[in-house]
Length: 511
Image (cartoon, rainbow, N blue to C red; front, side, top):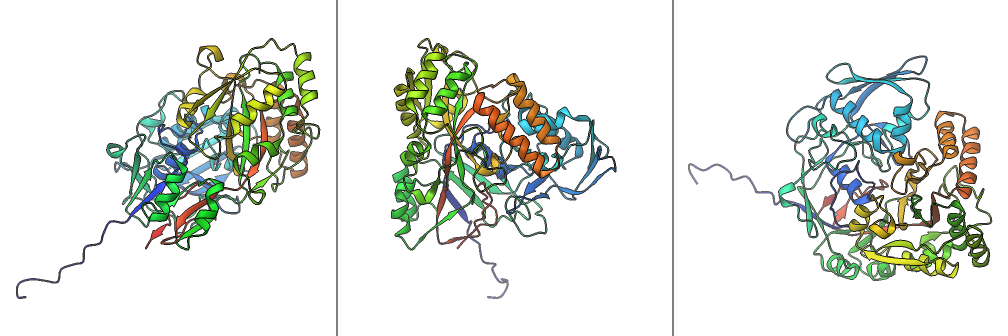
């Protein structure tokens, strides 16, 4: 028609709908190690370095870096074009403030800052880290793939007290958090960040180019696992992060559904002690629990299929370089009689174990009843208290006595890449008040972790890791309860899902 040009086609908005393993309640991935908050962090923030599929540290926000001959001065320069969601440029001062806040909470960060003489911004895009002594884990710390991860925030946000939760989710990452659309208990919404400049390299793990190929991501909170699966089968959602293992046959039977294990080394179950209060202030009673437990009881109750779990007494995952049984050959054998005798020897006074149970996470919900039954057989009194996972995450930060709203123990899981060595394993931080929830306090574990961080020879590192494991057998910070593989389920209309260890929703395409 005369007077009218060609009309450009209107492209429909592409929306990816996912059912996550937990509801999002806490937006601060530095204040908590909760996995859902870490996932949120990867959506909205970027990192200085990242780990690829081979677990090698690669630059992410950093363009170039140099190290002085004496290994004491590290100079980092950011790449061009980095902007926060509000349009402000990312500066070296933002990075310095973010490192300091992260370093106050994270175990590896604490170790790095302890050997830091000076950390300063020397230009808009350049900052310098000066060390007191050579330190072998600088890049591994700055690019660690496990919570707490060093996410870069605006300086004004990063200057928030590390013990106070931030509420501002302005980052420079591939997605923008739609705060006005967030409804805890229902959904969280993320929009493609048009300002984001991906790296030129192909994506690999958490590294490389984070190219966003959908317009909008909706995390739909569906607490019932069967309802999640039904929604996926009907096409109402596109992906389930962590479907329960007993429903995998139902998913495998549908040709429109694919399964993929995103963390090839899987996850490790852990029973975490609170050492501040009775009865677990006594290491002998903690030892007795390790003697009473049997890993198979736990993985059978949650995973069931032996194809998806591994019995492994090592603190450091089986399949990793530091895997070993040292210190635990006579533990995790289900020896109730020996455990009962040790509890009596320790002078147990009947103080109840307040055991928190997560009821809305299928991979965790059956663990606490198993632990309760075993500990009661060994002679401990157990008060099992059920709650949803996000309530547990908030409560585990409380130092109150168990009888005053505190807790004695809970069960969780870590990605195997989170617990590869003594420095990175959060539950091995035994620095008392600076340690994570549970607050173990042991000078020998800390001495060994420091030695591991300074050592560069692999054989000597392994010897130190063995000493750590033997010490933890005597002063338990937690108990490792086996490994398992967790498939993610998604419709075949989705392509590009990365094996990133954590759920990476960049690179995904939806047909």
